[in-house]
Length: 510
Ligand SMILES: Cc1cc2nc3c(=O)[nH]c(=O)nc-3n(C[C@H](O)[C@H](O)[C@H](O)COP(=O)(O)OP(=O)(O)OC[C@H]3O[C@@H](n4cnc5c(N)ncnc54)[C@H](O)[C@@H]3O)c2cc1C
Image (cartoon, rainbow, N blue to C red; front, side):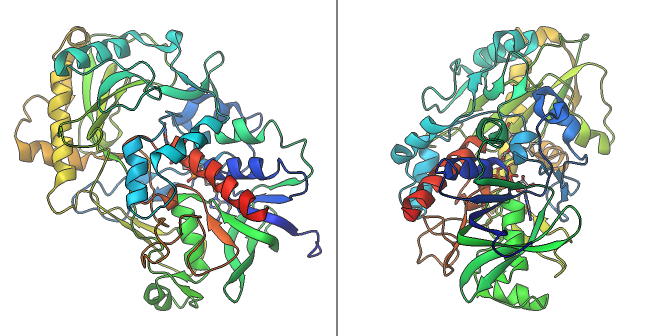
């Protein structure tokens, strides 16, 4: 291919959640050409991907990069971090629970140096989203999930929330909003909402699928393109006339920067990667929402109707001074025993689970390379439960206790035969903490590894216009730029980052 054929105005690396939004928005202008480099295949026509209820079948399969965690002395070292290798990225294999980040989440970003990202100014990007965000359909509302909501309200005196995106909330129980089409249980992922309607119609949009970006091309401090390996194992350089937009997610965006010599100089030198640009924050500030699990056996089978088996949940604010919720639960109408089974618990034939998680976790981890070979997966050290005051560990203990209060309240209590794990005999703080951490899981929300901040902030990787500090011709837009974790599930926040990025880029191009 000649250089001319391989040159586009914008090269988007990663056709995932944010990347799909950006590619779609930029190509609304027919004079702008965009190439999307996507490691995975298309999701078009793939029922296994497009059917929301089949999400669990995708975990660990051929469409999953499946990243391990490093040894976690105070947590669970066996957690596998699913990251989707398919058009639409993680919005093509996640559960599509759709929460607009709370005003306090955005304002926290602005305070952390993300000027222009405060709650009032972000509202406009939510209004632009093309995804079909709707409450869980009446037909999908399982009787036991309804009774979980009712029991949570009785036990904790929290409000019923109908439509978590209607008003900012601090507490409440209810069915979620989902980005889906209830009539056929199909996803309204980033690819479905933003790319499918336009991908065959816009000659200015090129999707390079099953193509892996392994190193950025720089001319001095300007990023001019990206080296990729195609499906046929060819190595090709794709050139960007205006900008490269890095949207490979919280694991693969810092990974690509590091392999391109952009990151903490000392770490790069240790691996003999030539340092192109010393940027100490790359890979730092690794965030996640850790969760634990408590499982009950039910007296018998549960009705099967559902959107995706975890359709309702609960937010609690234990600290009345906190700006938002400080404990969250997903209610699963299945026995979610994957982690407890590893330490000897059994899986009941019929059961339900509550998974308390930490909306604002305080532990901070780190992503780093262990090899200069770009095909070697990076190390993810989440440092789960290592914050100084053990806030994270204590939150999960509170979660288990609160879960038991809900389980003891009608109308849920009548369904439940016995607590399977940790089991009613586990009552002490230390015992509950040890259990909660040993079986801890992830809500699959890694973020923060190229965090945004003021241009004077040494640890920031991008400035509030999403430009990589000290370089030209490259921005990052995905979950990696989050300065801190929203209290709610992050996908809508990522979509909004995509919308704002498209505006910033379009604005600059004009
Ligand atoms: C199982 C699961 C369930 C979840 N459930 C929810 C939920 O219900 N609600 C919610 O709000 N959040 C949920 N999340 C989190 C949410 O989906 C993610 O935070 C969000 O989708 C991340 O978007 P992103 O754009 O940062 O990255 P991604 O969507 O992961 O996009 C990255 C894209 O880049 C591609 N890519 C990566 N590296 C390269 C490379 N080097 N070359 C070429 N292509 C590359 C990938 O193939 C992928 O398509 C869940 C996540 C998972 C895994």
